[in-house]
Image (cartoon, rainbow, N blue to C red; front, side, top):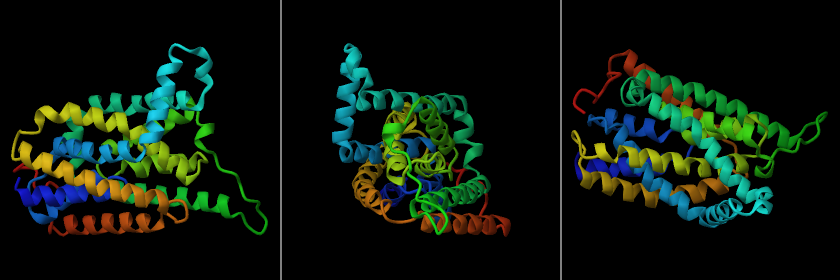
Length: 290
C-alpha cells in the first residue's frame, strides 16, 4: 500500500465511520473502484481505532462519569442504582454479541463477507430498514391530525433486554455494508428511542468492540501488501477527520432526517449491482492480489 492510498483510505474511514453508510464497505469499494488491493479486515479494524479515539475524546465527560460510577458501584451497593453505573454494565452486556459472533465468524468476515454482491445487498436492505425506522420516529415526533405526539424513550429507560438488542444490531455490522451506526440507530429507533439516545448509545457501545477488534488484528497489520507505516498514517487521518464528523453528526440528528443517507445507500447498492452485473467490476475485485 502506498502512502497516497493510505491517505485516501484514512479520509474515507474518518468520513464514513459515524455516518450510517458503512465505513468497511466504503474502504472496500474505494479500493475496488481505484483498482487497488482490498485493504482487508485487519486494516479496517486498526484504522477504526483512530475514529474510536475521536469518540473517546468527544464523549470524554460521559465516559469518565460512567467508568467512575461503574467502578465505585462494584464496592458500593448504593451506587448500583445510579444511571451511570448501570450504563457501564449495559455497555458490557451490549458488547457480548459482537464479541462472540466476531470470533465465531472471523474467517467469513475476512473472506466471503467482502464479496461486492453481498455488500450491495446489505447497503440496500439496511438502507430500507433505516428509512422505515426514521419515518416511524418522525411520525411519533410530529404527531398528526388524529394522532398525538408520542414520547420516545431516552437512555434512562434503557435496560438489559434493549441493551442486548442494540448489541445484536451492532453485530450485524460484521458484514461490510451494514454499518455499525446504521444498524444500532435503526434498532434503537424501532424500539422507540430518540435519535439522539440511539446514536449516543451506539457510539458508546462501539468503544469496547472496536478497540478489542483493532487490538486483535494488530498481529496481521504488517502482512500482505499493507505495512505498518501506511496503516498508522491512515489511522491518524481517520482520527482527525472522524472527530469533525462526529461533532457534525450529533448536531445533525437532532433536527434532520436520515433520509439522505437512506437514498445514498440504496443508489450506491443499485450502482454496485449494475457494475458487477455488467462485468465492469468483479465481485472479488482486488481480493486475489491482497
